Image (tube, rainbow, N blue to C red):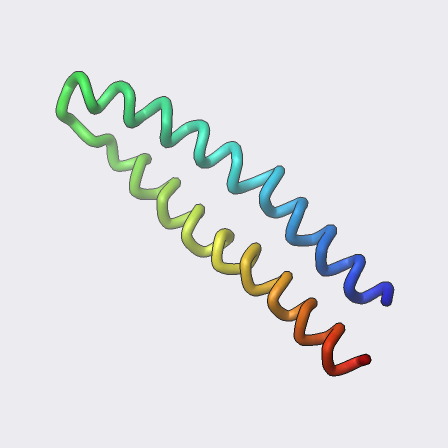
Amino acid sequence: MWWGFYLFVISGVIWAAILVPCQIVQARQAKVFAETGVIPPSYWVYGRIWLWFGIAAILIPLANVYWMVIKA
């Protein structure tokens, strides 16, 4: 039971501390390059950060579901 709780907390922390701030920065950059037409290299860096931590944030709850089904 505690493993499931901790896995959901870890996933939530990843979303709140990494993914949401990355999305905010990318959205602001997208507004700028929509007007200028120039995509800054940092946009792609944030995109890769979002990709890898997003994969982790999705796989952790899936592992949690697996853990709950196998444990039950």
